Structure formats: C-alpha cells, structure tokens
Picture (spheres, helix red, strand yellow):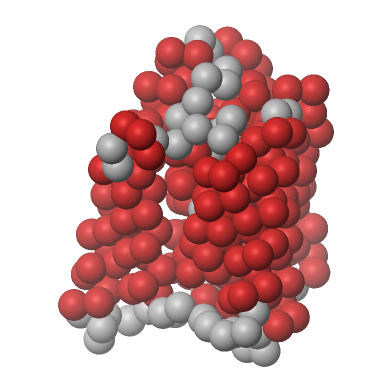
Length: 252
C-alpha cells in the first residue's frame, strides 16, 4: 500500500469516525464507499469490519449506560439467523450491486404505512431488522442507515440511539469480518501496520465527537440524521447505477 493511499484511508477513517461519533451513523456508510472505490471488495469488507468494530466498540463503551438491551437482543438474534443462512452461499456482491443496495435500502422503510413504521421497542421488529441488516452488511459492507431508521423510529433519546446502535453494530461487523475473512476465500490480505493505524484513527474520531453529541438537542440530532441518510443514500443510488450502465469505467 502506497504512503498516499495509506494517508487517504487514515484521513477518511478519522473523519468518518468523527461523524459516526456524533450521529452513530453515516460515517460507516461514507467510509465503505471510499474503501470500495480504492480497494477490492473482500479487502474493503474486511478492513471496514475491523475499523467499525473498533469505532462502535469504543463508542459503545463511552455510552454503555444508555444501551437499551430490550432493543439490542432481538436485533442480534436476527443477525445470527441471517449469517447462518448466508454462509451457505458464500456470495460476494459486485461493486454496482453493493453501491445501489447501499443507497436504496435505508429509504424503503419510509415508504411503509404508519402501522409498519420502525419501533425499537418491538421485539418482532427487532428480529426482522436484524435479519435484514445482516444481509445488507454482507451485500454492501454497512447496514448503518437501516439500523438508524430502526432506532430513530421510537422514542429513544440521542444517547440511547447512539449507544444501542453501537452495541448492535459490533456484532454485525464481527460477523461480516468472519464471513469475508474466513468463510469466503478471496485472498484478502491487509498490512498489519495499517490495520493498527486504522483502529487508532477510528477510536480518535469517536472520542473527539463525544462533546459535540452532548451539545446537540434531540431535535437537532434527528433532523440532521435524517438529512444525512437521505443525501448519502441518493448519491450511492446514482453511483451504483452509473457503474452498472458503464461497466467499462475502471474500478479497482
């Protein structure tokens, strides 16, 4: 890995971890887009899984007292069911599929009727979202926007949303890491020094963001979180469509 690429990826990890540290979302969605652009799909999935485990783990530790376990446990159960089923296929998505699904999925719950709107206090919904989010993790590398939609749908405050989502995402990214690093043999190889730097950058960005989150109101948090999801999702839909229509465009 060249020094320039190393600097670019570390900078992206630091900035996106800062963004995720504030909203508990969006940063991972941006980061996987950067990694998919610069790296092969399996390498990007593995590196992203490592950095997101570090970022979410540190964020979960910082806000552990706000975790809503009654929302987390059904979600993790759904993730477990999905990874067991998905491991039978060992499917690796193409980049156009990954980008397009990355953009479309977080917008789908907004089209549902009010009776099917997300509710993190509903155990059945937690199970269903866990299955869907784990499948999305394996297709695109992230499920943050869909997880965000789930946790934003209830009456949790911003700290409970960030904390509960962080704990939920630790399991999801660990399962993704196991899937692409062990079950799928794609010859993925990462420089150990870069992995350490990536983890340190993700933890640093998360730490710097804590004060900003405390300074926000719940209204500001929800308003900007929804705007971020919509904007990023729209970009990835366009980008995935372009890659599908113009497959000759060079892509690493």
